[in-house]
Amino acid sequence: MRRRIGILAAVAAVAALAAFPLLAGGGKAPAGKPAATGIFPYDKFEDDATCAGCHEEIAAQHARGMMAKSYVHGWDEVEYFKLALPHALKEEKVAGVKAGCMGCHAPLAFLAGDIPPKPVAEKTRANDGVACTVCHSITGFSGDTPFNFNWTIAPGDAMQGTRSGVKSPHHGIAVNPFLGTAEFCGTCHNEKDPWGQWVKATHLEWKESPYGRKGIVCQDCHMTRAEGNPAPDAGGAMHADMRTHLFFGAHTKARLEGAVEVELVPAPATARPGDTIIVQANVINQKAGHMIPTGSAEERVVWLHVEAIDSEGKVFHLPVDRKGFEGEDYTISSPGTLAYQDLGEIMGLADFKGLERDGDVPAGDRIYRLPYLDPQGRMTVAQWNTKSFGPDYRLPPLTAVPETFTWKLPKNVAPGPVTIRATVWYSKLVSSVARFLEVPEDEARPVKMAETVATITVGD
Image (cartoon, rainbow, N blue to C red; front, side, top):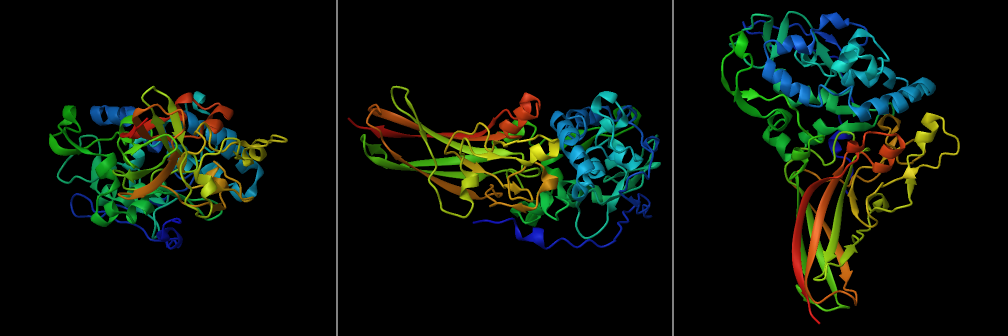
């Protein structure tokens, strides 16, 4: 059985190193200060509206993406104010998440010492999320491994960027190759929790993937190149390879569709009622340079649903065959199985029994997940409360994961063609958790990632 990738246990050490990116004149940019709360007031950073004065198109792209919504996004607000913050205030072990969550979700508030920030409705600058001037003030990172917002930052007159030979009438430009590296993304897309567990490891997964070995970095997929002028009304020039700033990922339906492929081979191709066929399905992470699901994998649900539809339209659900590995029960949907009991403890709910572990996933469907386990060994969606993991049964990049479905044809299956359909579904949040915490409905709405069909013939 696959376990968490080997590198995750080997990169725990952090050394106090600083980055010194080159400036456009051959000099060196200041290393900047390591991320810490209370070191820079809000007014040290211009707001996104000011940036949009010259970079209108880029700012419009950024406003659509999750970077700009990292604090105001519905689930993130619920998770922080209903779970993380109350837990931090009552449990010393996790007290660091009170400020730590904001290191990536509201870095301006974190840097300003505005902790905890006011709720979204108060409309403070915490709402800016990962603002333009945050990323473009980051100079590097401290240590050997990027994680837990260990970036270094130097806000001021010079904006960090990757293109040389360009000028701005409003600010200086520091040519900084670091912004074009996967390590730049890793400063927030790798995370260790208070128990020392890698609860986010997207950059580390990428590093061990075929994409990482080939040097295909995060930006190549999430900031694709396109022709454009970054500042058309401020003397900017057209470039054939301007980076888009949409940062599309798991919150974008079009990005999810087609990221996974599924192959289907039923055998034998002809059968009669009472006969048994074996359906082979190969599920392939064909396009993502990291595991699927990745990031906050404790919240995500990816599952394979297989059904047969006979010539009269009757539908027969096919449960997956077991493989027999340790912890496999976590990967097969089982309605009535409860989990997430620590939510009751965090929220102070007496006699809380837990919630449906698998939400609305049909019984017997295969789930691709990494179970996060709390200190009592129960599944949790509170990543900061993760002491251990169950089996890592996710979809690695460019790898086929085989499944089989053994189906004894029932007596009432109609003669003629029978269509076998395999569908891979993705939900950003377990539906039972979403309903319980009153998260916006869209957060748990399933998205179809892949679907394929094959046909057998049933004789009289």
